[in-house]
Image 1 (cartoon, rainbow, N blue to C red):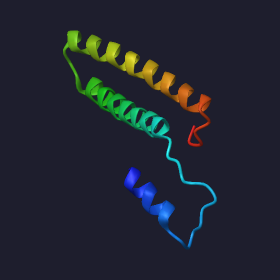
Image 2 (cartoon, rainbow, N blue to C red; image 1 turned 180 degrees about the vertical axis):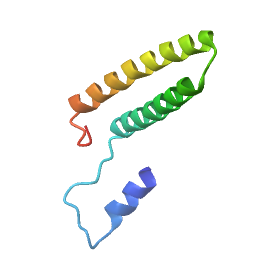
Image 3 (cartoon, helix red, strand yellow; image 1 turned 135 degrees about the vertical axis):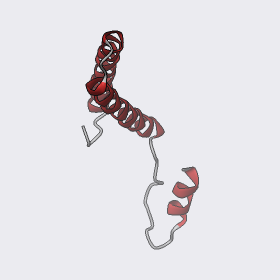
Image 4 (tube, rainbow, N blue to C red; image 1 turned 120 degrees about the vertical axis):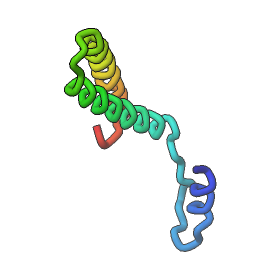
Length: 85
């Protein structure tokens, strides 16, 4: 990642007044959001196919936990003024 930034900063035709800075914390937050969303979709899909009562309960608890985590991450993204949220 830093290699790309260094290459951009060295391009003479663009002549940036300031060096390009990539906020890795924001990128990591976006990756966590995407990962949580993917896991949430997978759990919902598995829940819909499950017939064992005990496993249905496990999926319900897991989906609830993932929804809460997803909501928290979205709030964090909004607080950091990430444009997608």
